Length: 476
Ligand SMILES: Cc1cc2nc3c(=O)[nH]c(=O)nc-3n(C[C@H](O)[C@H](O)[C@H](O)COP(=O)(O)OP(=O)(O)OC[C@H]3O[C@@H](n4cnc5c(N)ncnc54)[C@H](O)[C@@H]3O)c2cc1C
Image (tube, rainbow, N blue to C red; front, side, top):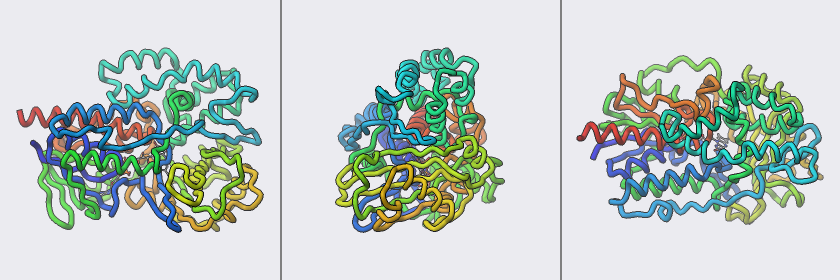
């Protein structure tokens, strides 16, 4: 049995801890904040639950694979991973309802809509790629088991390497549908010129395999990972920020923890500071941030308001350029996640989460900020609300780039630094450790950029698998 210290109890750190604990190692997780989950957090306003940070769960096959690996390792621990996790996923009826320059469509595009035929053609080519992407997300591109998936994907995209160049080559796609598909790359924090062509396929895969929310809210994923970790004997210590990481030891205000291996679930920049004791230079370009407005509603929104609405800017290119230049755009991409009372959360009032894509400027925002007010007016207009949006709020909380920078990346960038397109997604096998520091292993969004929860979970599986081999070698 080896001693492993995991720094950071975000989704990446918790997943690594659960895997290492189930394999029989002695694992301690050290988390700076008073709650686990990192960017995923649960808040309460007026006695109503709202989960902040991530909201949607995709690629459920990645979650299934995590449970399978815990079961495969943890037979001695005597628990069934799925039952212990207790996570119940509910599929949304659609990927979302999209609004672009006066047009409205849901994905999958329904019959009768002018984009339907083009969507059907696109979905027929891309919708079936879910298992290939899940394979790459959980085993990595260098594993021989990934070869068939790589060959299939390379054949589909050919020399069109980025999402933008690939989508622009599909001349038969209506311009509006092309922009709806392209804007999904902002979920990876960057514009379609900065992601591999594979990202073009994601909306079709999501339409085929589903977009999911855990019953009770997305924070149930954090609770599930915690349950799995604890069942594997992991100790989770919150409110204990790590102040220094050295070879084979981790220091906090409470003391020094010796470790055969250290797993970092931190943003790369933050990790650099803890290793060197100095604040390293900021990355030149950062991925986008967000302004999240989480509101309890004093009455339900009008019938027909979608559960997951996505408002595109009239000028997507203008938005991408503004984000690159770390400037507020004229209009941004907005997610509007509306859960009526009793849906998803056990609440007796409806809730609305508005996520405004924002530059990584580290700023604090209030509702009266001109950018926020302008975009609120647009939401009111586009959703056809009879009263201004804020009139429906009984209470709310704002999480902004300033908030996301506190425990995450500089400026509140959701995925840290911008990487070349081939490094932003599952075609790239990141260095989980380095020969200079073979005792240090990395997991989390800044080492597996661009894919949100599935990339973080899959990355933790890949990194931990290698670490387990390493520990077996050291012991053996
Ligand atoms: C607004 C928003 C919306 C999103 N929407 C989605 C979505 O719908 N679907 C999706 O799949 N993904 C989404 N994502 C992305 C997803 O939330 C992240 O990719 C994921 O949560 C990152 O997890 P992580 O473990 O890498 O990092 P983090 O969550 O950042 O965890 C790092 C942890 O390290 C801790 N820490 C930092 N410094 C120290 C220290 N010195 N000592 C100890 N601990 C420390 C932090 O407190 C934190 O708990 C969204 C993100 C945001 C912010």
